[in-house]
Every structure is written in structure tokens, then in C-alpha cells.
Amino acid sequence: MRCWLMKSEPSAFSIEDLKNAPNGTDHWDGIRNYQARNLMRDEMKRGDRVLFYHSSADPTAVVGTARVVREAYPDHTALDPDSKYFDPKSMSENPRWVMVDIQFESQFAVPLTLAELRKLPQLHDMMLLKKGQRLSIQPVTEEEFGTIVRHAETLAKAG
Image 1 (spheres, helix red, strand yellow):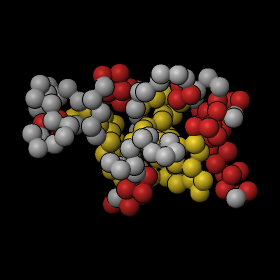
Image 2: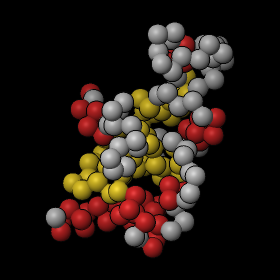
Image 3: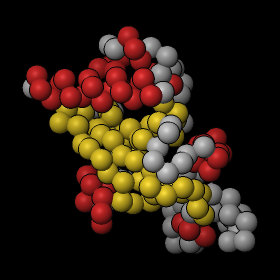
């Protein structure tokens, strides 16, 4: 099992959207970065854990967890000319882009902001906290994942 951080703008797709989807499951589409695509296609497996991160929000924060329930398959939005994710170079017989399905696990009572994450020494090497790191899908170590979940639980009990 691996762990991941997946970023989404809450105005486009939020943790609440995932939670309220049928069976708490939805596809993660629209990835148009080759490095992120390769991670989804080649390394994400069913059962992997996900930290759900709200980007372009005020504040940006890890807001909950999910689990990968379907491994990479062709992203149909790349073939839809009416989709904002349409890619005219993608072909159904040779898809350029993929997506995975994730299922809601939990929503943190207190979102963990970047400022809060930076206070945790166990996260000093976390990719998310590195300058210039903008990748929308990032690997996370099991230790980083556990640290974040435990810290969220501690903040919820304290608050």
C-alpha cells in the first residue's frame, strides 16, 4: 500500500462532493500533467490511501482522507469536446490521460493548513512543503500520512 496527496480546488471538487457522491465514490479526472498522470497510471493501486487537499482555497489545507478503489483507466473527459479537459490529441484507441476512482473515508473536523503542517517536525521532508512544489498528485510516506491523521484527531479533540 502507498499513500498519496491529491489536490483539488474546492470550487471544482471538494471533500464534501466526494462524501456526497453515490457510495462516497467518484473519479479523479482532469489530470493534465504528465508526471501526475504517470503516478496515477503506473504507481497508484487499489487500496492506496489518499490525503485530500483543498488547493486555491483560503486557507489551503488537508481536509480529509480517501482510498483508491479503482486503478487507472482512460479519462473520458479528454475525448469530450464540450469538457474543459478536452484534449484533441487524445484518442480512444490510445488514451493520453487516465483517471482513478477514490472513495471517501473521513473529513477532518479541523482542516490542517499549510502553516499547521509546517509546525510538525515529522513533515520537514514532505513534498507538499517544499518550495515550488505544485504537482497535483504527490507521493506521501506512511509516516507522513499517519502524522497528519493523528494531528487532525488531536486538534479535533482539543477544539
